Image (cartoon, rainbow, N blue to C red):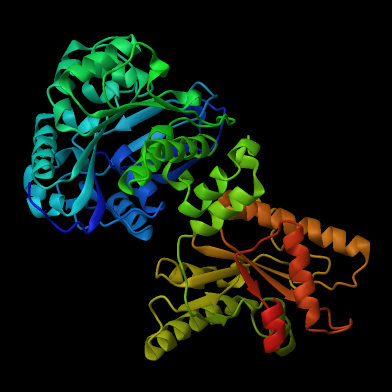
Length: 551
């Protein structure tokens, strides 16, 4: 066996696709009106899920040379996944999946994978040095279903065996992807097939770890009795077997299979309210790999795995629902007291702030979100108000020109511009990796009023990269009625942003006719935090060093 420096923790070889999840929970897929777009595919999910757990993962697959392929690449890169071997296929399109959530037992899904990019992976797409650079190689079962991808898998396994790279298989049995159901039946999870069983058993001896549900071990072992199936698998493979058992957790079998399913190492899960089971397996695998790669032992690895699965089944989607290391560790420290992770304020806050799309450093932001002031100026000089949008566009161009001249164009520049007059300017800057904020408050309103009505309906049409900016005139000495009304409005704004995934900036200004004290800003921020209002950004006036320290 060769000795190679392990610069990667994990390589994921298998499916990577775009998931379109219906937003109408309880609806038939036929009646779904809108969809959320997420990174998907079992291997893509695992690469993503392990990366946010601190694992140095790499994606070995193909995507199309189009918008969806670029989306997948950017999503993986954003969380630190190595994409040096995520190949752009100019002949094929990225795979798509459409999914729905009807009820706790019904999750319709349709795979659009005819001649898709990730099924075109071949052995020539990687070399031995790349496989040797990883501590572990994780394969998903779909890529054993086709001769070309199967050859790529077997080549990767051969390289791994020669170089001390651990080999793991997530059986990930999808009958439709083995041609056993109609093309539109992605929901069926088990169809007995001697051909699939034989195909799997030919290669199981290559693996160090096999992971699957009871049904997935049924197909691998050729029996619908779980113990019999596990014993049949043991006849062809000496791998450690990790059997996922839903709400009961999982069982690990390292040697001979006992006569009792509870005779292995049993690590019990935490019961949670289930919203969506579709991402549970990939989340489980991600947690398991964190513990396995870090040599923390099977019991701890399974604790991570069960907890990841529990968190993801309580949320919409899979990859974006994956817990980060900080979030998972917090959950494990108090899992027994969190029956509904989806409703736990601390967990939701940790998930929100540890999965932000972009991490900004120093920013230079040009604010031209003024509305009332410009309208007043136009009226005063008798000008045509239709010229205001043209002014906003010129201001955006000036901001771009200045940012280039100052060397801050990439990642250090931003604008604050309004919807009312600055929509064209917003459209021009969007997609250029600038920080972009948009005001929602009715100018000069006190108590707070929103300029264009209900925020939830507004945000449907906002790009996710746009930050919601809300200015509130607030004071600790406000009347109870004023304070209660503004607190309620701010909480609704914050909750709307949490639901849609938009970041929130709150700007606080003390009313000019009330006592002005720097310490009031510290008190007001503390008050908002006590209410559970935790924006991503604060916009505050310049204050003394001591007040900044207090804040």
